[in-house]
Image 1 (cartoon, rainbow, N blue to C red):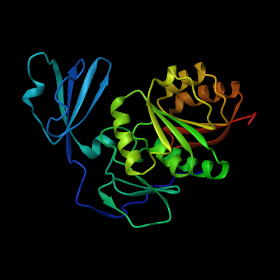
Image 2: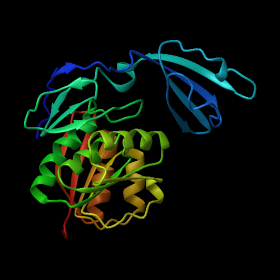
Image 3: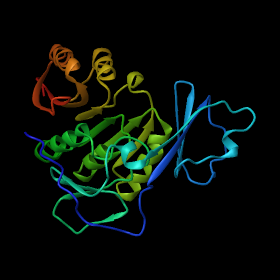
Image 4: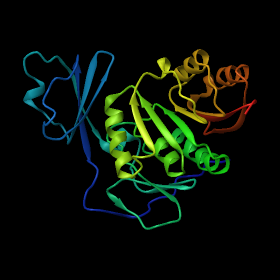
Length: 278
């Protein structure tokens, strides 16, 4: 299967819109500031640092320069550069993806309304698009009833699976991702089909499901499949650069899985595996 260019634009802007610029503060330690600060979009904590996101250009707040706060850096970006491009409505496989500030007409496609905030998963990146291409065919043809989405981000893949009829658990180790994923679950009215859980994918004891989707980094995927024992019919793995493809394929083969589909844009790779016993 070939992934063609994204079809866009599609639809007209509504009154609300995405921010033009965002400002990110990098602070040592946990952010203990006021969650009602004007323009606050979210806080990403990682590696002993907090990355605090605000809407606007060159936002300078005294609250983040006060006593007890070790400010390392402050950067401003165009929002579209941060999320990987201008987010307009786009068709990907059997899906029509659009942000809530774009109005679209019915197209016969499965509609996904995604507000990415400041986390990964708008559908602009090849890894997300290729997963959607495969999932659209897989779930409709194979009827995967229960699924697990590891590293759910904005929740886009979990929501896509839910809209096709799967019960999905989305896992992420980042509270900000889950906050944004919950917002998108509500936007898409799939609260009864998607549950979200804060957890480390490497320490997770996978519940019994038909399908596991993991759009992660190559090193994390290799650790995951090397350490875990899976008892699922299908695994969809994405986020793999070229150097990880053969090690992942070899590890999955030793675990009793065969390749059903492999999509690549010559940088990123997405591979669907099926259990030989399934």
